[in-house]
Length: 375
Image (cartoon, rainbow, N blue to C red; front, side, top):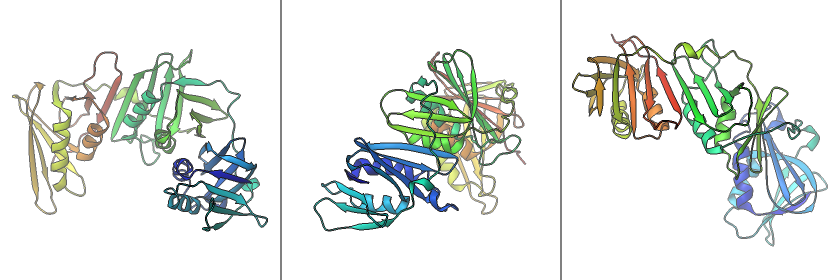
């Protein structure tokens, strides 16, 4: 293999690939990237056996071929040359090393490689029918559900998100057992009948990083989901975990409603959280009938206290005090983009429903949070 390639576009693709590679892979080949030169491009592939990325960048291919090379070493070297004005020359040597050098300069690097045959087999979904969707809408949906995606699998916690395609909408749901997010966006999905799959959290995180022209194409094949955006293909296994019956908690009974400006609410929660107890991270929201909200924090360990106040734009109902993990509120307010949010409550023992105030037809974002016990 021998190619010439510009460092900056190569580094852009390497950054995507490096986030797939495990930092401490137990199988040596998984620490490597597959480089394959053909036509007028260089293809890069990275995998951890669960999530795989295939991407490409333009290159002058002098000699086609393929090799695998240590991912982080290659990334560090290319990054160091990304400010150079000349392209990089990459070629394999007779002793199967990868020789890297800026064209016309004396700098040179030799990296140990492993054979292409050792790299896990890459899947090709091109024979399957693609469902094309608006990429921006899909990414917004993912951003909204990731905040409540679990970090471990249990009966009520799922380390991923339920993705449902309906003919004219995309629906995603996630839960970590303490909170649940439901979002629905009007999207033409290309399906005739509803489709339901469970996608791992890491796949969704990596999908957010992909950029490209045109719509996002989704395919299903052999218990895998494939996402294609521009020249990049990301795929992973689907989860076989049973997703909880989220419909039971999605619309809790409430008799109190508060509407607040999102940014002032977020700013004051961030300030008051600085003195929150390190264990339960609790903040108590106290609404009075006049619509004044008090946000109070007390650190049991140090005795520190903090209070902030905000006037609701609208409040309906009687006075109520409810405790929450402060980060749960901050994360919701940070991911939604609307100017106003509503809190629908009943009492300190039952779920609270938070929603951005949106125009009709702009989609749904419901965030259900369990309260903390107030002693």
